[in-house]
Length: 218
Image (tube, rainbow, N blue to C red; front, side, top):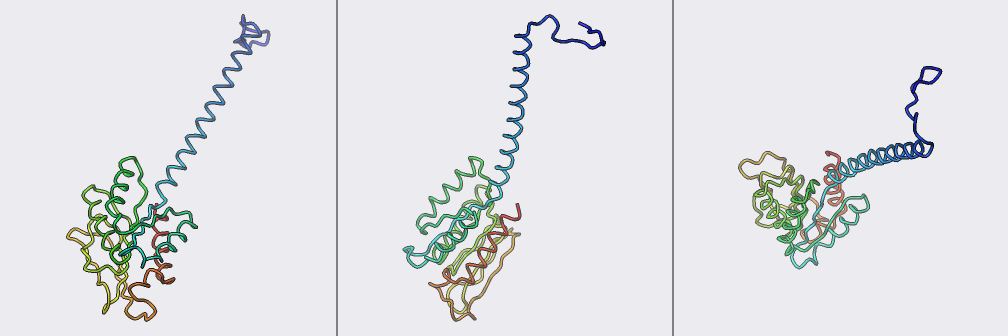
């Protein structure tokens, strides 16, 4: 129907009730569309945040009683909003399974592995096992590992604290390793020795800096 001013009246022939119902449906569709847009934006933001936050595993040494500094380190990470889990070195195979399952379910957070003494050897074992699944390790930190193995090629950066003469030795990469390795000899620091290395505020600060840098890359 064309009105006097020449405009088309789309609701011609419809009752007031029909017109109100039509407007109600249009308004509902508009509201749902807005909700969908906001939900999509929120999901995108959460996905980005989820992917950027590192997944940090800290592994104690023998018996778990000499690596209490890792608990302090975990508390500092959590205070900064970084997820951190502290476990004993015997837990390493279970931790490996958990990481593999999480990755299979879509968890793409960068992986950070930190270990002290025997735990340092075991985080290298975890990294090597993840290599067979083509799962990268963004950061590997070892504190005084003993008779350690080489670093697998899936590790992007490795930081190794050791004492020579003393406990530990420089780390080397596997054939095909193209990441970075930073070997830090603490033999000149008389305040640090094997069982106190994880408790050193200076070393903890360095590790925190390394882990925070991982989140900033994403």
